[in-house]
Length: 320
Image (cartoon, rainbow, N blue to C red; front, side, top):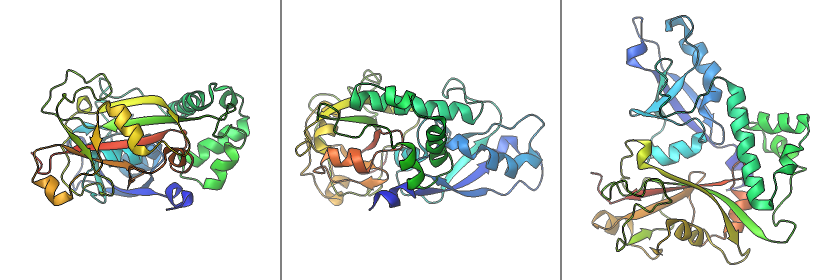
């Protein structure tokens, strides 16, 4: 898998207008679209509006997206949302589109593309500050470089366009010859534990519960725990100091989980018959072996915002 192939990755979506918002018969046909993995759902707004506008009441032009009753946070890249919530390699990914009753208690306001653009550059500044100690290089980007960067994200543009946009940004290792990775990890914790640790990085897992993270498993190779709300998801954003030729993905995941994890776990059949939890770990939709050097992942599998987005899916074999 090359960096170019990752950049070209897309999720086929089937977008259906919510039944409660259908005002004509027959109902409108679903919209099928290839959504770039590294982009954001609100950037499909114009395409979605153009498709459904004939059945919408006047003034309704800002869509939001839902999966099985759960509003999808627009600030999370589309590919990460798919990896976190789909769980079974469902293609196309069936999403419901709404134009009314925006769930402001769950989703941040998003009036137009400029809000998404501002979020992206804030994430890029955060990642650059983590890896190099300062975000000044991002803040000093020329207007043309910013526009090239945003174009490459907003329309799934070429890797070459993105590379030109970040040409003046510092590379790893930093000026002190140190490696520091910017990590965003999303985990579905064990919903039998309760929510006492919902605000902390995976503290909801009780001592004595043995976690096993199985390298080489493909996402969806066993049924995941169903995520019913964003309260079931723990997201942590943090720096991680690396030793270039030593620190592995397993080291990073185990550190954030704050507990030991077995990498010599059982095969999927054993996991399905086990009462112990196990995890699948994916980056960019790929089940990455835990022994992979994390410095390599920072260079080759980070998102355009320079974060390495890691999805950890918690399973108990048979879905309950």
